[in-house]
Length: 73
View (cartoon, rainbow, N blue to C red):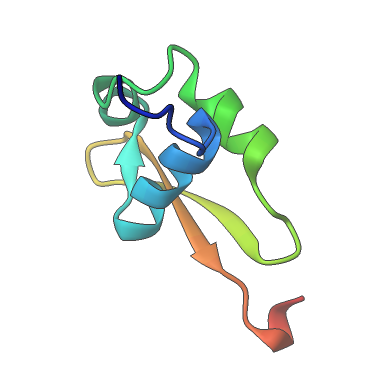
């Protein structure tokens, strides 16, 4: 029997969003959560991470998580 994953759904999504920006559909397609936008919002460490939403040329909203630097806090 395998050990359960210690990371929450939100933290797993945030790790993906640190690597690249994703649309709602792309986050949903990861299969981590049925409500990925909620899981990210509730798991974000606001003292060290910032959620950035941008609108692409295709008019789709993309989410990305950036680490805050000392000057941005």
